[in-house]
Image 1 (cartoon, rainbow, N blue to C red):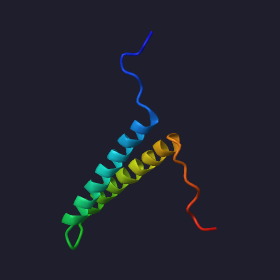
Image 2 (image 1 turned 180 degrees about the horizontal axis):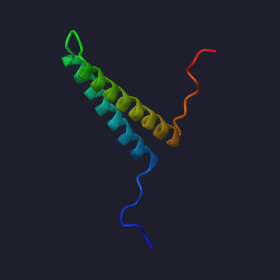
Image 3 (image 1 turned 180 degrees about the vertical axis):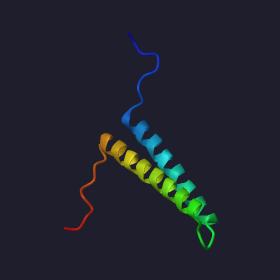
Length: 78
C-alpha cells in the first residue's frame, strides 16, 4: 500500500531544523535588544529559557545535517 503522504527526505528535515534554529536565534536576539541595563531575575530566567531553546535547536539542526550526509570533521584544535 502506498502512503498518501511520503516521508520528508533528509534535506527537507534539515531545512526545517535550520528554520527552527533561525527562529530560536531571532527570538534570543530580540530579547537581547530589549534587555534593560540591569537585568532582573525574570530577565535572567527568560534568557536561560531562550538560550536553552536555541542550543537545543542548534543540536537538532546538527543532527539533521549529519543525517543528510553533511558531517564535518572536528573543528576543535588538538
